[in-house]
Amino acid sequence: MPLADPKSLKVNISTGSGVDIEWKDGHATHYSFQWLRDACPCATCEEERKKEERQPGQPPPKPATLLPMYKAPVKPVSAHGVGKYAINFKWNDGHESGIYSWDYLRLMCQCAECRQKVPLSNVQ
Image (cartoon, rainbow, N blue to C red; front, side, top):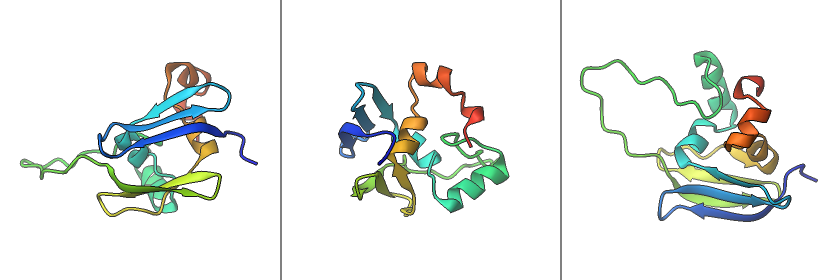
């Protein structure tokens, strides 16, 4: 059984505003789609972050080019549940291998209260 369990989940694909989770213990969390994509827990993304010494949710460095190419804002094309323990997104950049468990999402809560309890540098 997961340590964290959502009471309600709203994936706001059409508005692009992100994901809102109300946990069964009454806590509420909002995740922007950009943060979720930058915190993808799949092995490939974990390896890239490790090489670049980034924390989950921290964006990759921008290339130093004179004329940066336009990049559409990241957002999911679709989202679906994975059993009773996680959610998976298919992103507009083609990526779709990350499985965001409820435990992972709760641990990575971005609210001020939770960030004070568990500094991101302690999460690996």
